[in-house]
Amino acid sequence: MDYRRLGNSGLQVSVIGLGTNTIGPDLDEAKTEQVIGRFLDLGMNFIDTADTYSRGTSESHIGKAIVSLKARSKAIIATKCGIPMSDDLNDRGASRQHIVDSVHKSLTRLQTGHIDLLQIHRPDAETPIDETLRALDDVVRAGKVRYIGCSNYAAWQLVEAMQTARASHLTPYVSLQPEYNLLNRGIEAEIIPAAQRYGVGLIPYSPLAAGFLTGKYKQGQDRPADARGGKRPGPFFDRWLTERNYAAVGRLQAYADELAHPLSELAIAWLIAQPAVSVVIVGASRVEQIDANAKAAEWKLSADEVKRAVEVAVG
Image 1 (cartoon, one colour):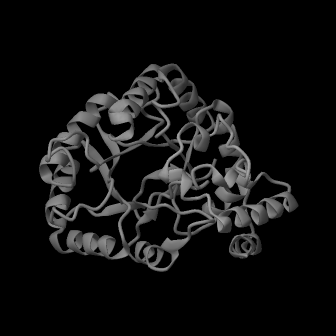
Image 2 (cartoon, rainbow, N blue to C red):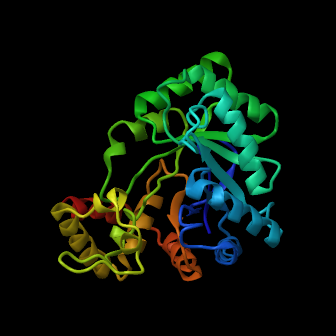
């Protein structure tokens, strides 16, 4: 397994990370331990969760699994806060109040003394960025959090945060988690240049477009009952089901076949080949998927293959 620094930090993370929003809906405690155990055994270390995933269930299952496996020293645990956790108006956002409360609750659920990477789940227009960064700086100084990052920020929001941290001598973000895959490359125009300018590592989520880039969904056919789009249909998945995307997946499938690899491996390997990317978040609901994700990381695309994949996707 290959490792990279998380942004400009000294933290070494595996190029494949474990996405855990299926822990709770698809994985109970026993299956969570099996999946995490296999993930760590294969040399991967970055586990990404959030307090909002199943309202804390994901964090709780992860915490129990890590304790049972006696694997805290092997795991880099990243979590997030910011999305509403209840109807309480202060139980959301990136205020000092919510950040401090969220860290305490996440530490309890995760059964650990520190969070390796705490990420603001989405921008909070109601809270000044100075308040957010000062609160994050405090939890870092208190030893409860080691690194901080953000998710779903626009380029200007990232720049504002990095400039504020620099001017006020506060702990800066080391990572940004955006949606990024062969069907959605919108971050390349502004977000990637901004991240590279400030030494912020990218942690792409939805590398397989919620499973659409596996090739298992066929236009005009019923969705596989055991796949994400079949089990949990809704706007997050259904937005991928367009004529343009079906056509792109068809072309990408043919290109993957030409290279003698599964389409999912092409999608993951393409992201790993991007210089701005530190770690790619890939979900798994079975041990076999952990093995497949690790295998994708072994494929090193050439510069020509990276370029050709984009050309094929665009059509």
